[in-house]
Image (cartoon, rainbow, N blue to C red; front, side, top):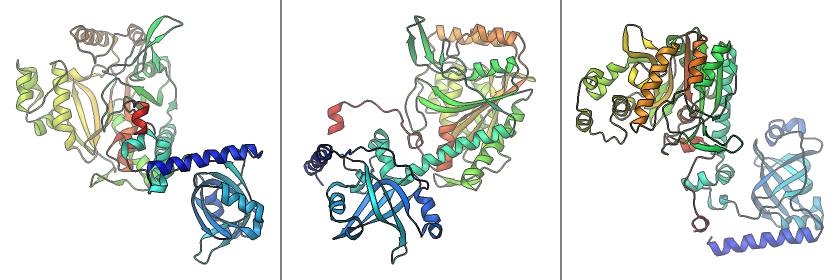
Length: 495
């Protein structure tokens, strides 16, 4: 169907709206509450087979047969077939139905249930009401919405025309709910911390900046809730978690969206070994609860979430997959030469921390398909983690990798305020030399630590990436309802 004929259809529908209004009929009607969903009606056919039943939803198909018409109606739960017949409705109402009702409209109806000769449960309509008139034609006319960018820009159409996408986001909601259930069963308390912050802390990332007019000062969308959650541990909470949005002013890719959902949890008196056990148990629990299995398929690979996960030290992984060691990097004057030998181009400042991260990102993490703990990280990349007691150049930190993706970051929290102050100073020195993605100096956080910050284990899990794994998608845009996209001009949208 070409654009001209599509515009003609929409013109006719707009004229129908005006006609209905002029006739005193509201094409955008009022409430229509039903006691049961379409799924419940179908699942309990025997119970509802006698008496009057009401149902509602959006029309997604119409099949006319002269004096009778079959209509497929979808609510959130399921589809249900409606049967409109001249003999039941009378000529006036049936003519109204044939003239006014289109695919995309919302209707409510009441009638009796029966099964067709093919066994399909059907509502024989005795009365109906137009609840909302659809003006634009749904993409289902063309067998669904397929173009990925259009699907992301018009997610509402994606949800209407691609039922599997609606089911995916229902599954996402269940995943988040099961994470909450698991942590609450373990005694964790859910809290909320500021998303608008005077100092962006808790991660090395470039923030989004805004201006608070009432205070006449710049503020930042948070890059992490970490430092506020740790303040709560200082204040007496022992197990806390937060599931909410973070914002980082970085690139957009299949693995990154500037607005993303994170779980952060903190456990007083624990360390990163305790958090390792907690995190693998959590992932295993969520997979079993939502998928009814600890085994998934991701990019053609079978992945098993059954604990215990594989473990490998950071330096051993670095040497095995990149062919160099941390000592090689710490004892060279030619960091650029090492990157060139590895075929890596890096735009960030040439610091040991940035080089370590770049090599790990490009050469190491992609190799971990089965759930793997990489632990004991270099101190240069861990400004908030506690130093390893027998090696001050390393930190008690781990990350979880699954399917070649970083899923979690965790460590024994640095609770020495003097050490933390010096590390913040080092970060500020790097910032003064032009490094944008550094930790800010937060003196209030240092003060809080000086009142006493108990030994604590912390955990951060990227919810979007975990959902990607569990639903088998290879782009983060597929699991975010409204991913960030470059703005299009109006004339571009219409082309």
